[in-house]
Image (cartoon, rainbow, N blue to C red; front, side):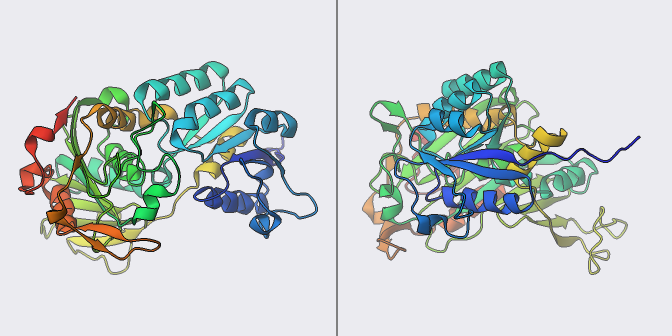
Length: 410
């Protein structure tokens, strides 16, 4: 009997939202086309992409169909998969439009701006019998199972908590790039485009995953502290602490107002050491208390020896590639909607929290940005790092502008 896997034709894909961040999806689809896994069948944009925007990314003799009508495009192209990289408050309706046609979805993070919309999307996809992959690319990192194994094997002793730090810089143009940018609501519809819910959402989802608390029911309480230096509705400097059913607290501190931006990271704290994961770099550092009898817990690097600290870099599985493998060969789906339920509980807590507190001009200054001036909160990088190190909120760290009375609990 021939055991060779059957040949599967490339899956026809429609991309909704091909500019901005969507350009990365367009390039990734082109990469997977070269592997014979997918085929770009259509692009949904309000304004069609020009030939110059598609140059090198498709066959000019057979360009993809283009339309502003998403449903019609799915119908006419016979798409099997839709990649949705559209404003986050459009995610649920577009995902359900695809599901109603039997089309599977790769949905950019965050999945939805409220828990109710998330549940409507997840329930609708499930009822349609289709598959949805949520686009938290960090959850495709091979570092996650490696870190989980280290913790399970006792490499850092008893798990005490997980903290994350994200210190990025965004100028004022970032908050005017689209009508929904920097908004909590738009025309009466929830948007919730804040530091923790969009640009640094990976820090939240990755922290919860490493704490073993990714499901909605894993969350028992959430504390939020939301602030803004820029003249926006949403938060640009925030922190959150999640209490979990496992008793492992998770804190995430984030800012878009760093003077010295750096790669975001997650710290897994244990009784015998810590593991730091730079999730945009797939890089892990293990630091253990000195113990001459300790081994290296599976580290095979030549210079690891008996050191109590070492670093390893890992690979990453692309989420569209994983979705294609799931549909074609039954590979396990890496980020189904239920695995982002705890993250959506955090989004809901931020959505229902008091509006972010405007930081006084005395604590921020104006600096140069890429396209426009930006606001810098002095000392915020150290504050964000201290939160990850101590699992504390800004108010508990003594930040003069963090008022405990503004903290919300849900």
